[in-house]
Length: 312
Image 1 (cartoon, rainbow, N blue to C red):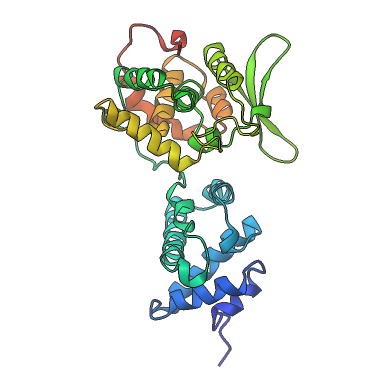
Image 2 (tube, rainbow, N blue to C red):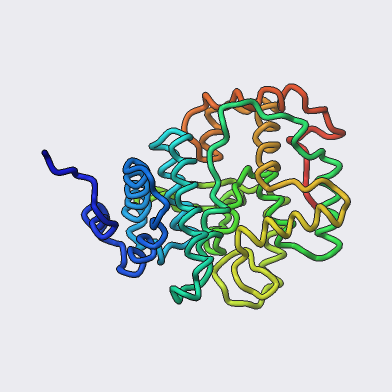
């Protein structure tokens, strides 16, 4: 009988991924104990782990938020959504196991959070306008943030609503990315690869808010947005911050992603070409814009047209 090419133990996983540490392989063996009834399930775990750690060139125990998100941005373009979701469930299960036994393995219980904030592509369905906040609700939260002097939240909401930026892009911003060109236009330069950059034009009203915020900072930290301890604001804390602000305003909590959806919908409603929008928000192709059909159709005309909205 021919020898199976399925590894007998997780130690043999190194033939697929050389980055894995002895400690992680030991943890994986203990996780697998009495869990895998089918060889196929074990094999799926092997390939999922190898895919993540080979792409990030990291042991599972040395992963970071950025490495995980970068991997999923790549993986989401290479695999179908069901595969991406299946692998994410694998990573979350292993991460929870590690965190639950963190003292035993002498590691910090930080791994679950890396996979709870992963942003996956939206499903191929139309977006329901009823799930989105109204401009009146958004304005109330803006007013709350301004009154409480929570300018980091104010700026994050502004970048999502006015510039269609994702929460991952917002939390990764550095001061050095912000610039003004010879014509006075403001923008953000985001490194896409070693050979290319992406430029996001920033409306003057948002740019002024950012400049005022930076001018009041004393901490010498390269990140643009800092928390109250003058450390880079994290995805999780920013999500919680917005949620708390919504609750304080007696509003059903909404997310920065929902503000981004409204931003894209209004660009479509105002007649911006789909190709230009796709370039601006850094997505490939325009076929998926059909998901915004109901939002664009049902958005009520506000007192001022979207192209004239200013955040002050």
